[in-house]
Length: 247
Image 1 (tube, rainbow, N blue to C red):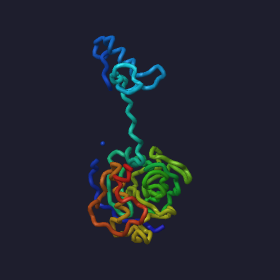
Image 2 (tube, one colour):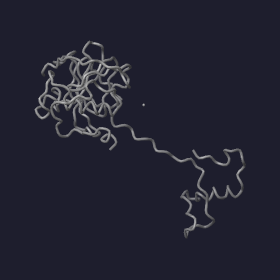
Image 3 (cartoon, rainbow, N blue to C red):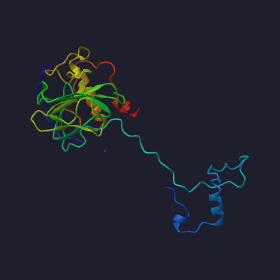
Image 4 (cartoon, rainbow, N blue to C red):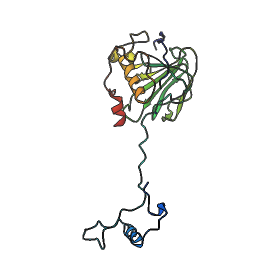
């Protein structure tokens, strides 16, 4: 694996998201209201026939006073992996995206751990890769590197609620981004992504793509967010993350 030593960018400050019945009012319902309410549901549990239909046996009924049932919002496919790190410091966008701080790092979503080491050729030595198994990035591999202590093992199935590492203050911070499918190193070093190593030029196009995913999940913007990018974005990576996460 190529050494990924590089100069950190300037560190910026974090910028960090029922029906009411007549009885409820204290008034006694009238005999007609009781009769109308009971006619809403037939003896066999089926809904009463609409007024004016051939099967209607009486006058039009009033709407049921039963509370409406609201369906819960679907669970998020991916979650902010740094949501439990207070005072997270966004840093440079390079092969991936750099951050400073201390605390637990979660997986983005459902995934399988494909690589774990504490002696990688990156500053700090930490290296974890996992391949996402759900959502718009299904089949893509993520790396978390540098000042991280892994808490998972190869082959482990994880979710967005699984802590995969602890970020510590070792002077290098951490980096997160897209990895090669093999988990060997950052995807930016592949020819189809421009062959950009830890020496730049930065930000890379694929690093910016991961930055946009993090932005869509509520992570603070990285340093160089508005700079011109270098390299290419290989096929298979979503280009509109807010839209992709809603589909």
